[in-house]
Image (tube, rainbow, N blue to C red; front, side, top):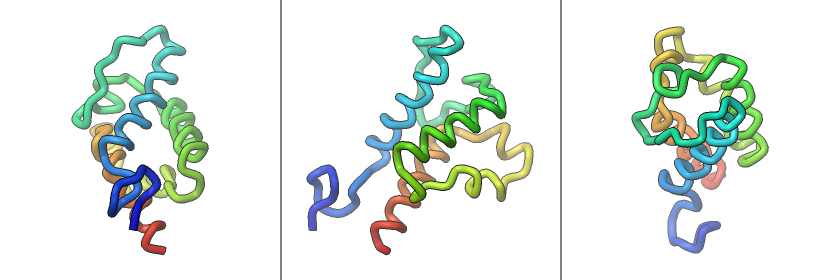
Length: 107
């Protein structure tokens, strides 16, 4: 069985999702005049990117535009305490998106 990207197995892997999220974050950061930020799996939203809660709301909207209801960012962060949200990394979000997409593929 072939996935959406032509590979067998999962349709979307971590590299693809990281690229998607990096693009979304670049769009957000560009509004602040920050267009040369290096975004990696270990990059934190709060400490490294200095995103505010409103930026995370915007990111949630961008995720919904890209992935529809298959990825629920609000549900993802709802189970976290404040410290976990402060320390949230791009990689943890990437892993959540990949897991959510795999779960909906398995249907």
